[in-house]
Image (cartoon, rainbow, N blue to C red):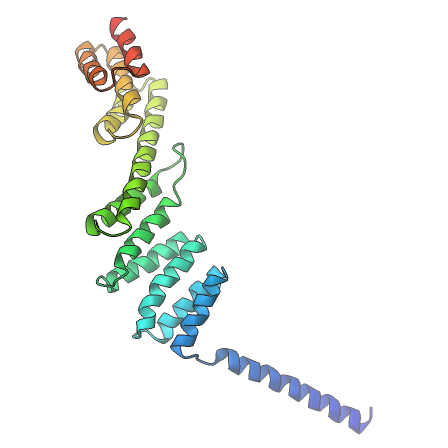
Length: 248
């Protein structure tokens, strides 16, 4: 190989390595906080949620005492939420709530935390742990920020959450009833009657109480419960079925 070719190869090799080093230095260069925050925001707009969350965290790490870091905590939590990384979102929101209780966006932080739980609610046949967390979180929104723009929606979602919790209690109660575990069934139906009176399950829950009371030979308790059902829901099909049980 000629000396000229060797020289050219060496030159191109060094030029390539130099280019890589230059690119690496540029990538690792610490950006001003505004540019870094704007980069995260652009990533969020482009639905690059994972990358946005990481960049918002970078803002917090590199500029922890700036006003941008405070905003980055909340925006990072939102990016995690959009990426369906709910645990990470809740952790970020808890940090924001703990360190910035007087922030103008604190109501939204509480609301978004509740939404993280709400979006994980499953049907009544499955575990309702997230439903209970969502209900508690929405209660916090309503209690702490009753005049906020989030309160009305929180109340509506609380209705749904309560209905799901009542539905699961009914599912378990029916299962126990089918297994002839009457006391356990009665406890589930009574929980619905005592704690979820505004849900659509209340009529059936009262009927099931009557059903169990009659099986156990507690006719007095059955008649008392029937009066409650008849007074509140006189035209209900569950009331009619209860009347047949009492007569029979």
